Image (tube, rainbow, N blue to C red; front, side):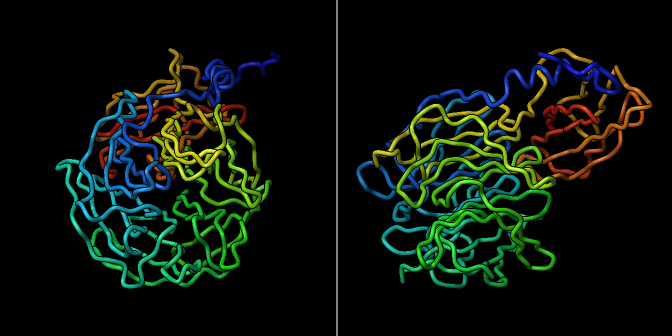
Length: 404
């Protein structure tokens, strides 16, 4: 390999950067989902744990059970189920702080309800329902503690274009402008840099869509920012991780289920195909990330068989935590009020920056690295997992930091 000559801040790390290239996009198979095979369940992340549940199981029964994956150990355990009688698939889910939420879905009826999960108490509480018809297959994203529930399908069995904003702290709903580009059912959503993103899904004419849209919550407006370089899909997953958007799997208009993964750079508007899941194509699985790895579990494969495989992709966008002992260090870690970023190879002639991301991919802080030791103030942020990305003109690397 013909490597660049090390210069600047990151003597940092050409060695680290090379380590990242060699081990980028590494898929690992984990223990199976610890219950019956299923599709169209939900997942949300609280701290270092992902909570996965509901969905239609291999006996074609809607479910209420939930399970927790500890993303530090990649081990499953049982979590509290939704109350009996609330079995469903096609729900929306999201998290904020120590709480997870399940909204809507299809069971014995089309639901418009909201359930809040308390991770500390391991229980569920009913919250204020959507002040509109029940819906399934809506997508969602969270911006500044407001959850946006987008599209879906009602009992009329037609995709809808409604957008509702749920104020998590105040348990209130507000209607927003309808989607200007038509209805969407089983689209995929994510949050990046305080903007919402939506891709794929089927419209009111059952077309499998491929456009990527950006939502500005301040203006309540949508802008098309790109088109996926393949054909349209539905039942896919969109993740925001370390400053990029990543799409995985899904079903296309020809009935093909995919196992591929793509990243989209919102700055350059460039798509890049990444390593595929090393197994069969799938759709309708539960997907989530912890800031440095993407997880995918359950779903339906190309043979229309429900599965419970679980997969993990470390370093999906060629940015990963540095596990080697190099000059770039963070301490104390875990941190409380602040963390020190120390670069032993610092060079005053090299322009270098840092970015702080939360565990759903939002950039919440950035700055320049102007000396060997940079103090980063975390006192204004809640406890949890964060990712710090350091970058110069030639390379970049990230590290996890935990605030407690």
